[in-house]
Length: 238
Image: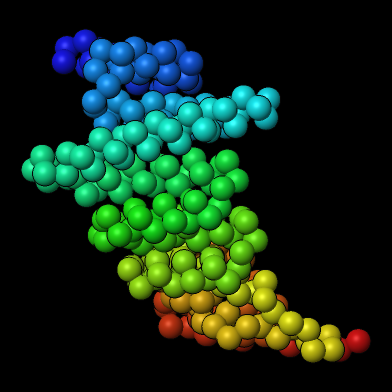
């Protein structure tokens, strides 16, 4: 155990310094000592995943992401096998493993696998479901899958109605479904409400100006948590 802790500590120091190759070597050495520790496999997955983003060579990047996936899967197998170890944080740990595996999948361009794995994270730890559904929505947004992203953000909101960022991202995806009738932009149902809810929750949030601009673009009123309303200026006719 002492040797394992020393390897884990050395790996953390190396990772914190951005020296992921050393961290990987330390963690692999720890696995050589005892390959039954899920935490070591999880940390190895993290080192491979984070270091992959630093690679300029596409082949090496993919290789590291594949290694991250393998390490996370091993961590999950070990944690699931020890499900009866009376660890009070077992479900949260399992969900964290799923979450990082899902991120590795997304970085590797395996969107469907990523979405399924975020779903597993949410099911494993319902108390953290809002964040896992939000992460799922972000991946789907980046992949251009607006309808699925909106559904993910709706699940996030259902799990935590106070998560302002989910309303904003839902609004962004809905805005992408707007249509033109002549020169007039017609927003999809729920677009204005999503941006208005964001402003209600965080009137001066990081996306407040963008939310107001988007409401103005569809001719909807700006509503904030202060109870004030400001109509968007009328569009000038040509």
